[in-house]
Image 1 (cartoon, rainbow, N blue to C red):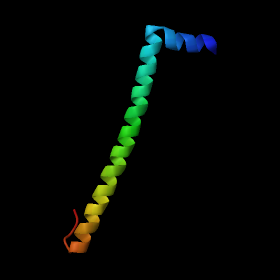
Image 2: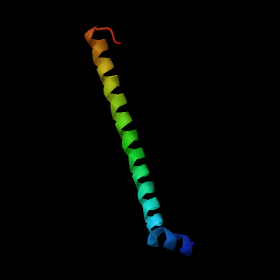
Image 3: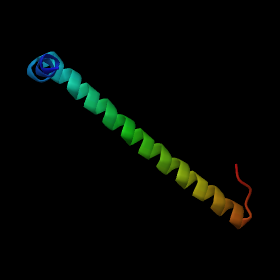
Image 4: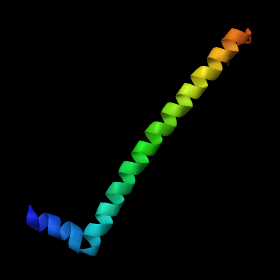
Length: 57
């Protein structure tokens, strides 16, 4: 295990791989939070349209 960890942290390609991995995890978290927020805001807007008596799309 030490050899794999050393190669990940000591070589340029290992550091780039680590950076890409961390970036992709961050992007995944961002999109999950973004989509949840959009779904909730759209649901709230639909609820407001229904209570106002206006037909929803």
